[in-house]
Length: 455
View (cartoon, rainbow, N blue to C red):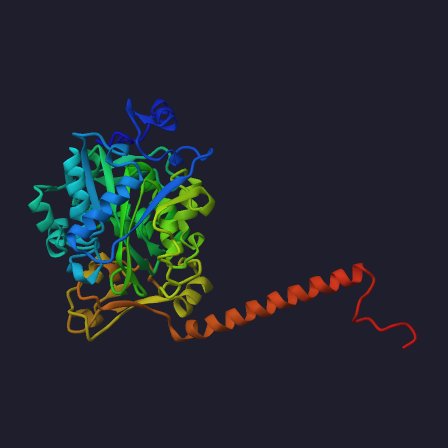
């Protein structure tokens, strides 16, 4: 069982130990920023890695870990550690939807040589972890190193007394049976959360397809972000190693475009890691709601002044051309006029009839009742159809689609309204500036618009 959290929640006494940096009598080797922000800066290591060549990735992982103090800063020999890669779906590694096998293998080799006992796995959006790992190339790497696949297809309900949203949720057995977690996220865009990285990677600790049910429970992006933070404050990954050698931009997390960034990122603070990744792709971290919510919950920090970047510089990787939506996620819930506006204006998942194979995975995973996806005329002769009045924009259908036939598209009214809203906002800002200037002029008794006496 995780020694830094307890199944069924923490007792008051256990919580006190955690605040002092200890839990259940063992030293807590995570960064102290989790528990206090007094004079402590979170460390994020950036290491250039231009390709997935295995020796080069191994060298980059070793360098990054060295910058953070080495494996001994996070682990003890003999500990049972679970590696949690991003296995969103069963796709080949060249598509860069999942954590690359070279990154997985490099981290695994370093930890095995240190003396850790390893398992691995994730809860994909559809199908089993074993199938996804096999297609994504991780199973082959794991077999070479004799690393067993953990149980991510089933789990047990836990109680998280410090949760800020929902205090009881299932966690995969592989996570509960391990003493610590190493998160191996992939840097990608996401239509619902803007960005998916270190914090969101722990969503895969929810077993099987039950993840989709929580999308239906937490309709608002802010509520969903808070739930992701709750999962993280329960699981508390010891270390995060982000695969940003080739990232995904645009229509992520499953059907986006590949983007060479050429680096690996390491930290014990998942919030700080995500914040630095956001700055590299020229995205304001405050637009990624898990950053602000994570800092508020004590998970980490997203503020640049509280983060120490080690190794290569942020500026050497910064890419303003990275395709990502650079604005906060909007609300997707609502009734009455709100639902109508959402249906007409908000981006929404759209199915390509040319690419759709009629497998029905999207219909199966849709979390709402009645479902927002259905077969026209009750048959599978044509692609499923969305009812956008019911769709909550969770994009579970896009993540589950094995043929990458679903993409986010903004309807025509939304494409028109966006630029008009921008122009309107600028006009309002100019009007406010003019009123302030006029008020100051009147206070000084020199209103330039007033006519002089006698004229």
